[in-house]
Length: 116
Image 1 (cartoon, rainbow, N blue to C red):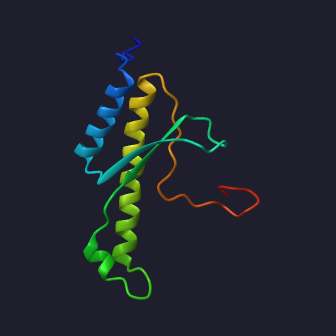
Image 2 (cartoon, rainbow, N blue to C red):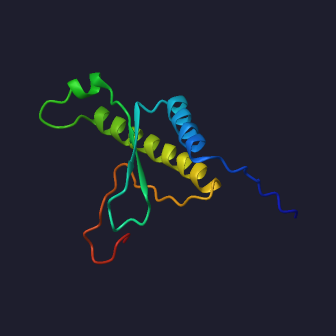
């Protein structure tokens, strides 16, 4: 079997940023932010934040607790954000940069053995 890895031409940083912005617009991301990372636990110089506008109608239907429709919408939007992060990460990695995707809604295990 022949190796068929795809070679990517490296872009300038400003072109990478524009590529990421264009991707987010095309995907339907509501807003995107870029900032310097000041978290010493994460050894990366910059962070990217994504915003997706939730359905105002579903939000307006919440009274005392979230509805099942809202719960589904929330999970769907978080999956969408996670998938967009993966696409952004591929752009960064293909241009020689490291990335760490932070899950849109991450549950932290309180169990002694996580993932059990």
